[in-house]
Length: 109
Image (cartoon, rainbow, N blue to C red; front, side, top):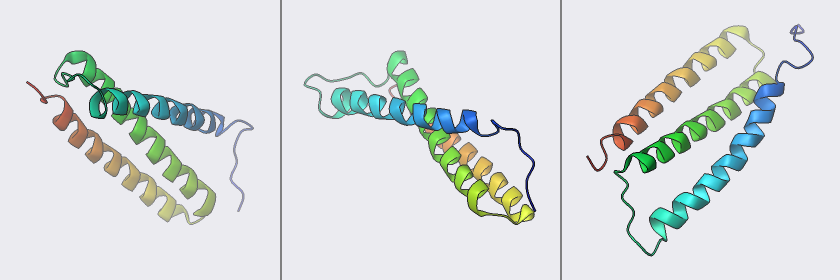
């Protein structure tokens, strides 16, 4: 059974997977340099660092969940299993987003 798709059906996901990977690497270097190996203390409770770490978390979640979804699209051919795994990925993503959000936002308050 062949799936009907357009010629660029996964182009955005493919491209943003690469872009998010590069952004994650840059943000990780900034995070490690400033927070873990910096010579001066960093106020992680400041709004700018909260936004920085929330953006980091959102990029990581997108990158990881999109990677899993691409694997499911490539290798799972049973429709109900694909739908179930897609729903599971959404639930896992939402749970991790909530956990990250409630950890980062009140930090330093």
